[in-house]
Length: 107
Image (cartoon, rainbow, N blue to C red; front, side, top):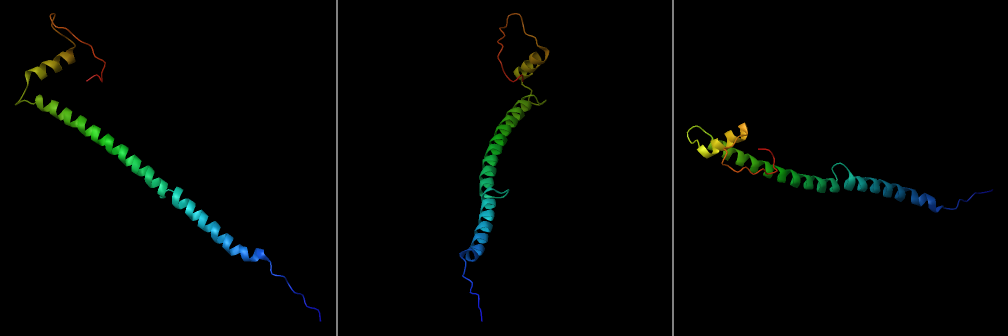
C-alpha cells in the first residue's frame, strides 16, 4: 500500500498571523489618521484655539463699539463725540484746523 506523506509547509502557519497584522495595521492607521483619529483631534484643538482668539478679538471690537455708541445716547450725549462723527460723515473741518490723514480701517 502506498501512502503519501505531506510535508508541513510554513506558509500555512503564516496566513492567520499575516491577516491579523494586516487588520491591525488597517485599524491602527485609521485610528491615527482617520476622521476622528488622534491626529484629527490635534488639528481640531488647534482650530479651536484659533477660533477662540478670533472670538476674543471680535468681543473686544464689540465692547469698543458699544462704548462709542453709549457716548452717543440721548441722555449722555457727549459733544466732542458728536462733533467728531459729524465731521467724519460730512468730511469737513474749520479753516484754522490741521487735518492729519492716517491710513486706517476707515471708521
